[in-house]
Length: 303
Image (cartoon, rainbow, N blue to C red):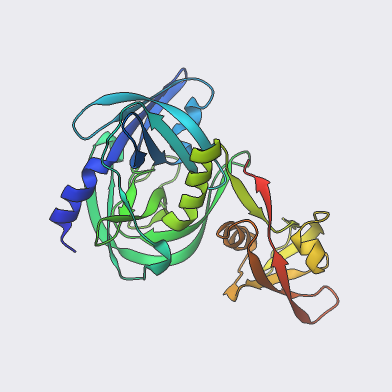
């Protein structure tokens, strides 16, 4: 990877985001996703801007120092994605990569504004794929089938770009693991990014309609279950799982051959599909034995 060339190419498409509300403020990052002659759409994390969803101000700062007021086009807490719009056109748009074609060991750059330090570039590799990561609160819980990277990601990097060796965005940086207790920790080489293929569907729906959708299996999981897999406690009427004949009490063991370790893994895996997709679900039956079901996922408005 020519980090100098990639940094020069991509940095102008990555912006800093400052949020101010009556209770305080915060900073984050974003990428210019689409731009025409009069306005531009910027993608970021929902958790970066959610405090200003009902009141407050959002300011986007470009690499040349220009500061622009932004409005929220739409947001999806479930995927931790938000889209902003600024009334300035012809901004440099970030190139889109294909997150389904990345591999462990591929070189990457993380670009954003950690701790408010704009246009910061860090390098690393893809450390792992398909990491089930859940963040947020019970009210606004997000589930990400994440790309893991050891490129340094710190508070303020959220919403910024994870790019490949060609300077194409393959993920939206979203979360970090930390060893600290009580406070906000820094990078320990465990950063997580929303795959751009997963994010793109949500982003495009928000731009088109102001809202987004999520795939629905049509089950409720048993929160008290502590064994391996994800145990179904009840079914939603007329949704995919019921139509396919999966019985209550079944334990999901795999989805399209991907092993399901726990409930979060099951939710994250389902969220990685598009509504209407058909998936193969292998379960342990409550009566004993195992069985495989073909399920067509439904669609519901994202919360």
